[in-house]
Length: 243
Length: 279
Image 1 (spheres, helix red, strand yellow):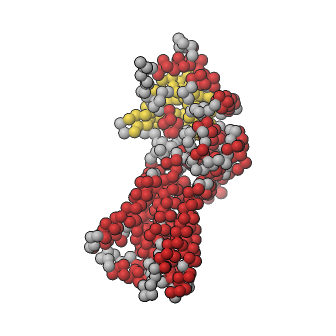
Image 2 (cartoon, each protein chain N blue to C red):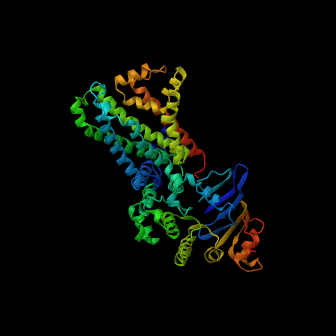
Image 3 (cartoon, rainbow over the protein chains, first blue to last red):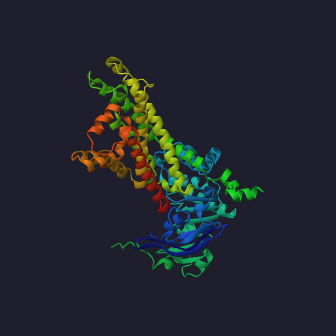
């Protein structure tokens, strides 16, 4: 379970995350939504200890991430598409990650097979397409067989086959009792794979509910409609009308 | 009873997970080695450093004239000014490379305590630089064998001065690699780290040299470039000190100055890493 309590992050005068509180329970896929710049990535980076909160706390299974003895075996993280050095092969990238925890080479081969990267495992990551980079990121997140997964835009850039694969994967992981926190802008996709959604705008919580609760309370009757109504006042970057 | 002893001597109870499944410093060192050996650039830097040390010494040896002074050892280390670029690049690559490539996210989610990563980078960089510098000495000795035989310049490792110059060369190149690592880890931008290294090692020294005096000579003696004193023989040190109004650092003092710069920069990098965000 992920617990975020009164989490705040300021960069000088800008407040990126503003007193955010929510939980992502185990055994469920929690969708994490919000317009561009709403603070989703910043929140995820604070949960895994990459950024220090200005105030508030974030814990995984009751402990701050940085205090976990074996973080990769507790939490699988995929935050950036380009998380591997372009000059290193996919296999080397995963092996370096595995070595920090004494995870055996055989597990590296396993996650490579699981994510369908066998054919390109010994190619340099700089030659990868967006979708292959996503698969490599997911492979890294699965290395330690963790009970919690934090995935930032995991289906971005995947082909339809890959989208279906991620959907099945996160459903299966949640069914096994794991915690999955997943951000996405693809509402149709989230409606299919998320049990609950946390919606934020301008760093603040806008909604924290199950998908049926959110959809039933909306006129349009879809997650997309519900999302657009919730975030109507919180969109910072909006395109103009085409004339 | 054992529990009491643990409390008394404050031995932390070793958690099973930490012993078998968790992050340890040894594992982080293995990971950093896997990362470094998995890139082409560091391999080329090592090869180029060794080749440059040999080629420069051989070329400079061709211009030796009888009565130039110097010894077999000073000829072997004579390419130092350019050769040190190799270890510098190696250190900067290790220290700053992660941030530019976006892999810092991966590294520091695996090791959220962060400082073991910097410690492992110091260990890996020091070992690779030490090996490279030793290979550079061997290559330069081989490349200058003919010239040395022709001009009667001995290279006797049993001779204290010769051994000191060669060891000093290896130590100063290793120190420069760690200086690059410290600057890279502190500034997190390869270009900024190279710029700062050029200023500290060469530019400031040359600017101050145009205006000699007690103050400027003292400042010059305390710049990290003082590490190059390590590879001067007794005559070289004597002529350098005769021309300077700064403090007399002796044969090893320059190395201590470089070591203090390395320690200071690594401490600053550790502080930034510990306190700040990984961007």
